[in-house]
Structures are given as C-alpha cells and as structure tokens.
Amino acid sequence: MKIGVIDYGMGNLYSVEQALFRLGCEVSITADPNILDQMDGYVLPGVGAFPDAMNRLRESEMDLYIKQIEKNNKPLLGICLGMQLLYEDSTENRWTEGLGILTGHIQKFEELDAQQNQIRIPHMGWNPLSFTHQPTWLQDLDKEDSTHVYFVHSYLAQKTLQKEVVASSTYAGQFVPGLVQKGSITGMQFHPEKSGPFGKYLLTKWVGQVNERSGQK
Image (cartoon, rainbow, N blue to C red):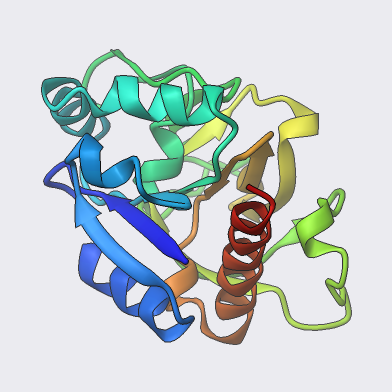
C-alpha cells in the first residue's frame, strides 16, 4: 500500500514517514502530482504557522491537488497544522483563508481561564480524547482503554460542526476538537506518531481503511 506524504516544505516529515514505515506502508514524500497520483492515501503533516503553510501550498498548487483528493473521495489525514489547514480560515498572525474542506475557524487559545488565571500557551502535553461517535474504521475502539494522545499547539478549531468532530479534549476549560472527519478526509490535532500505544492504534486503523479502500478499486 502506497501513502503519499505531501511535502510543501513544512512538517514533521521524518517522524510521520517512520511511523508509516513501521506499519508496512510504502511511503513517498513528494509534491509531484505524477507520483501522488499513484498513491492509495495521503498524509498532510505540518509544523509552523498557518499563513506560511498556505502560501507554500498555493505556490506548489498542492492546495488544488488536496481539494481534488476530496472530490475523488480518496483518504487524506491531516496532522496538527495539517489538520488546521483543512478548515475555512485562521487568525494566526493575520487572517488567512484555508482549504475550506471542514467547517470551522482556527483561532488562538483564550489566554485567561474563567478565574482569570493565565493559561500556558502552547498547549503541550498528554490529554485524553472523549469520543462523541465512532466512525466505521474505529468500530472496535475500546473506550475503557487509555485514550491519551500528545498535543503541541497554540491554535485550535472553533465553531466546528458537531457531526465532523469524532473526538475532543479540553485544555484550561476550552473545547479542543482532536479527531475530526468529513467523508474520506480525517484530521488529528495531536501527533499520533508521538502518542504512544493509542496514537499507534489510531494510525494503524487509519492505514487499515486506506488499505481496504485500495483493495476495492
């Protein structure tokens, strides 16, 4: 099974690549449409600022390619900033239009809690996910197991659609969409490749659905 990691010059490419290798995937890190066309599924990684990432996606025309992935109903996984890019827009540094695949807006964490205590930003550390529903690829999820995953982010998705949020967490009393999905498009605000056993489970299940889809061609 072939997974294309979309390379636009920003992202945790090595750690994602190694995690996919360990799951038996053939991985290509590229922005070449001719190579990407041969892939069964895609990962959109990301570390850095939203405006810079969107500029690079547009310069390489990967923004158009990603939208075509959605139209073709092929699996794509956005990780951390890669998930945020799937939303309508962001106010990080300045207002920037996103890919607009998911409904919602990327905004910074509130810096004070209800008691007016200063909040530590970025949100960095382990938090459990609370699942509102289970998509078909997670039907064997055991909610009794630990669902802790590792977050590193200063911005989060807000004004999202409930039906697109599969699982969420909280930080300083704020609702944090953690795992989102719309059709063949999935997003993880956390880093599954750095999230221990449960992160590996989620990545394994995502790869499994890609494999299932590729076998149905």
